[in-house]
Image (cartoon, rainbow, N blue to C red; front, side):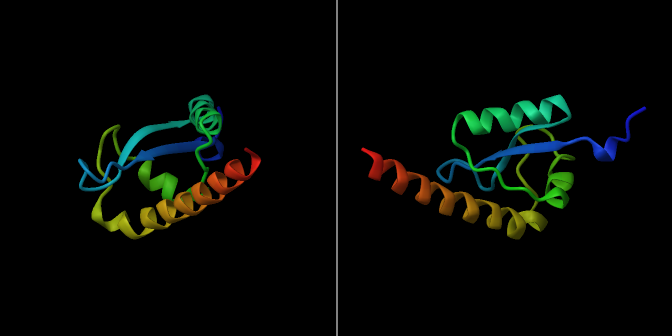
Length: 97
């Protein structure tokens, strides 16, 4: 029997500032499902932020659950990372064309 703690886990979040009061969980999984979540993110050039502790907490939420207030600060760091990565990506692609 495999040790569940050693299996890769992934959580996908989304945040629509116009209709959501907080970011929401859009996908969560472990093992092959986690690999699929990460592969889909890579296919769509979504930056991947690795934080095992945060993934552990977020993976306990259900799909479409808003993140709890206690995690706002941690998730804000994730969105800041994504914003910065997105800016770098757009600068690189603008310079290619």
